[in-house]
Image 1 (cartoon, rainbow, N blue to C red):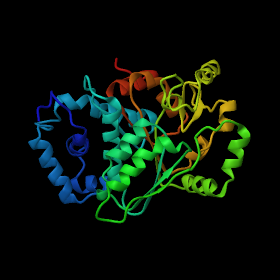
Image 2: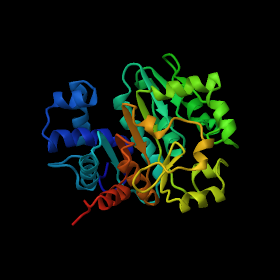
Image 3: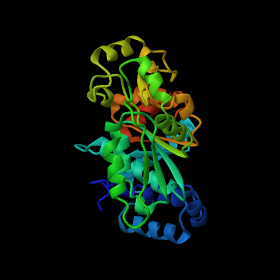
Image 4: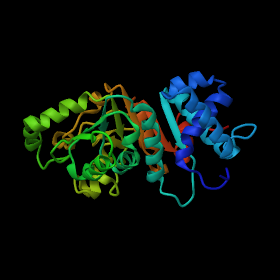
Length: 320
């Protein structure tokens, strides 16, 4: 592979191994423990990285900036992990971030795992790109209502499992935003919905997107919020949302009537999940992602190179 032409998101794990080995000077045994793979697998990945041209005497310069950005994001924002997808012109950002998120999940889904998934297109890309044949037994749990937004990835994931027991999916059978607060309150205590919400609060890993308050957002396109709702959000200083709960530039949840009509776990409950992976990209989402990091809602982040650079600028750690 030519290091200055097409970048394959599937090479991310090779880059991570190469960085640990050549830059951090970790032993193959230590890398194997970090990634939950065998030492022999690490050796094979290093060989593949060399043959693919990702590594010469040092990491190929076409990839180096992205790997350095990953390290900076971890350091500046206190993240457990960060994957920065190198920018590629005329390429669908969400698709590539989905591949990066699936790659990260593949290192984490070991044994029995309850995996919470959030609402949105990028999260759907992660689920669709994850090969559940190569993971432990996974139970998928939706973190909010909005069945139509989850249906495709959940059906696809079941079809993706052929040799072992099919992946189980627990779906909150409700819209993400109801027509009235009274209806939302009644649905939350409906036994079938209450049971899935309880399961959602207890997942081991969660994958969530980060939204923005604009008329092109998924939650608006699917009819859950109106253009007038978006105008109200902007008036109240909202910069982004996770799971349909909206926050300001400091990451603080804004008190809004919309939240009274919402069905899903709260951001305060999301924080209690052991590992929360945020998957979001596109430069227009930079401020929303930064606010999510300020609110400490994410333990890991998968994003693109332009956003990573902007996040570091917003944090006062931009290139000088």
